[in-house]
Amino acid sequence: MHEQIQNISTLEELQALYSATYGKNGTMTARLKDMKNLDNDARAALNTENATLRELFKTRQAEIENAVLMAGLQKQKLDMSLNPEPENRGTLHPLTQSLSEISAILESFGYTMHTGPEIEDDWHNFTALNTPLHHPARDMQDSFFLENGNVLRTQTSAIQIRTMESESVPIKMFGIGSTYRKEMDATHSPMFHQIEGLYIDKNITMSDLIADVRAFLSRYFGIDNIELRIRPSYFPFTDPSIEIDQKWHGNKWLEIMGAGMVHPNVLRNCGVNPDEYQGFAFGFGWDRLAMLKYGLNDIRQFYENDVRWLKSAGF
Image 1: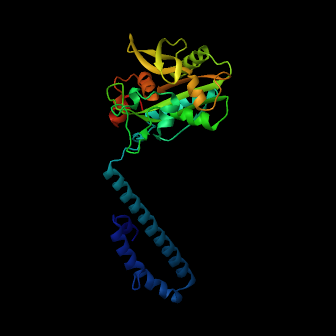
Image 2 (image 1 turned 180 degrees about the vertical axis):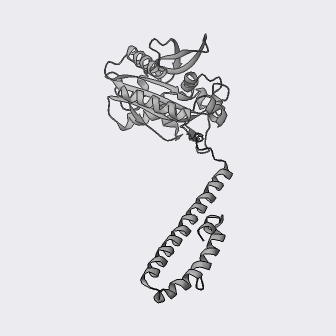
Image 3 (image 1 turned 30 degrees about the vertical axis):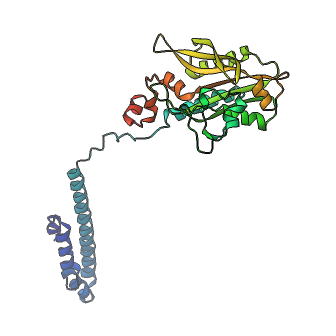
């Protein structure tokens, strides 16, 4: 019996032999039933044989089950030494990363973040900002107007107006949000993201503006002596006004920011006395800054949702 059990290779065969041995009419079952007719020595010998036989069945069953498991693993050809495939984890969009970084820098300078509606009325988007009726921004060719006369916000300067109307001076804030203009090329998008800073207090000068802007850009780009070009310009809501350019692709200059001292009319429109308080404002598209930082040639790449490009750019 011992040799017969060891020669069995399948669980079905082992079960059949076990049933023939310990089933209702099994050979060992019959012998155990007749144990009462045996003397003490014969009983002891039968008990030992029975225990040994059951252990043999149990051991052979475990051996066959293990052999079946190993055969299955070999069939699957799993190489447990291989490294697992890398997880395809997503990341924040580069514009989202850029906004987070810019906001953190400005907040470290003492500016507080504000937001406002993307659909604006004429007062907050144009009139309060000292924008004359003949200004191109009021033209249907340049801005997205609604039937009721409201407009998709052309600049986040409207957030500055709302802040000056609702808060008392001194004010040091920056507004963020989407803005809309009818323009589309490699460096312009009809919908882009803008940040505008405003600092109103006593004895604020153009030197304060340039110092803050230079410190901000140095932090953002990680360049100590960042090369900038400051040009005189015109904006209806600042006087004097400047535009700031940065080197792009070696020897080209790219406009990245408009700024200036807040126009006295804007202060008056918001209930601030320009004879007592002065201030500066600056505004830029963080899409444009991200272009420079990540070395892009075309702003539209940010909005194409091309995963291949995002991966190649390190996102």
